[in-house]
Length: 351
Image 1 (spheres, rainbow, N blue to C red):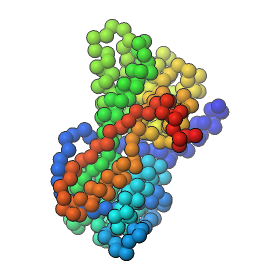
Image 2: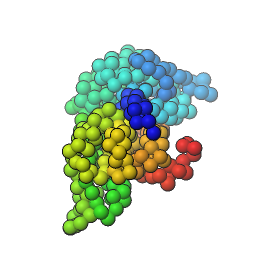
Image 3: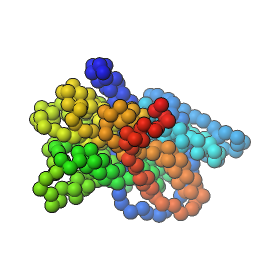
Image 4: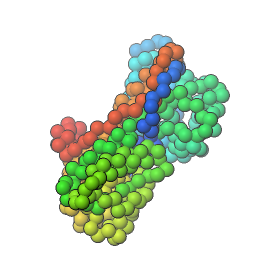
């Protein structure tokens, strides 16, 4: 494989896949509430432009659902949008979708526009879980319900009616077990590529460590030793750089856990450059097509995968219950599932 070509491709992909699924929900108990609405979104669009769609097969429009993810250039959020749109249109709602391109200021301005348009509900993936707070509060004051998908808003005083995301702690536990399987009885030294500013990614690492610590308890051999935790920034470039640094500091490194696919693919580029790809095992997290392809090629050992299709459908269902005044679970955490090479070899989407 041409390493330079691989790395340049990985960097380009990182711009599209940055922070996929990072910033998601916690492991707390679900709370019940009431409220409603429904919507769907297209995966197209760029910049801050609106993308609208009307309901199919219906003469009556029940309302408008506005969707602002972190970016529409990330396939993860596009998949959420595709299924959100389909579920919304099936139930008679229009969709207004915009792209803040990771810019919280632009996202806040888009939410101001949603308020002016008096949309039925807003579905938000915060570009910044704190800084988006004032925009959420303005929607609250205007009587427009705000829902989050994938990533939570953590701003004080900002009211979120419902959230759908991945159970990231449980996914981290799956990653920990995959690491145990990858290293076998010998154990080994592990690098963690994290992203501490994203709550979802912190939970992934916490779940991972829980399983690794339980594995190590009482052992005198076969210990899995986390020798470094470095910022992977959720992207290819930083994943590559941090891994290259770790390989210099730890020449006997055995494995890497990366909190998403882009940073894992950046890590692989550094490992391959050091000619260590036959020894170092990589566990990722996400389930994007590029990550699954890397598993099929043997570049990544395994990864817990998220289910953005379910997120898109279920957030619409929450909004509809809110609109109908029905009780519903305010926080829905969708379990991750482990994806291995055996799964990749049988995956029809990869053939």
